[in-house]
Image (cartoon, rainbow, N blue to C red; front, side, top):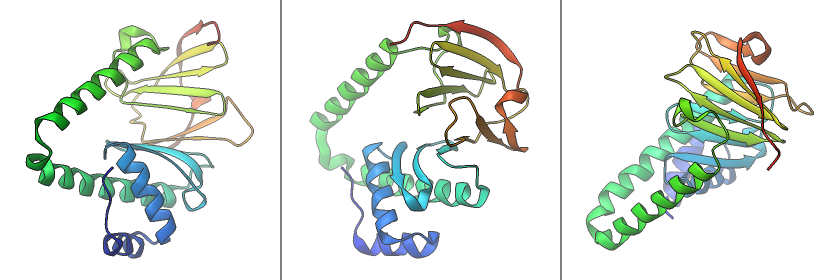
Length: 201
């Protein structure tokens, strides 16, 4: 795991206006995701959430644009720092570590392939998430969002929206609010392309 020293944590806390505890939690989460993604849970970030490099962010509470922007900026900066640390230490890690990383990635890819629940024709999603019995997969190029609740799998047309964040209403498994370049988007307002039923896992 990559770690950042206390001076860097202090600087991040001051720059992004989060506590040192919150920063340390996010550093650990982003490091666990190899600088590319993070699964976190901290009160200052609105509880549990997920971030993926490229602008995809899912928070638990109602969409709060200022908080979304702060969390995304923090994750991106930590991810960049970890990426720089990996590049700087690449020569020291040697081939063995690289082979191990390749093996891990292959294992992750195989595991994801075995658990694919969205229509295979859509290919690989740009982001996925799961929360409170609901899961989603977002395909930016195809402009599709696939949402599974229980046995039902629905494919939505995202129209001209570039989905940047997803929030789930507390106590609801079907009420999702999306954030795009146009602001908040109610999932119910997007056209349903197809509906399928899968047996529960």
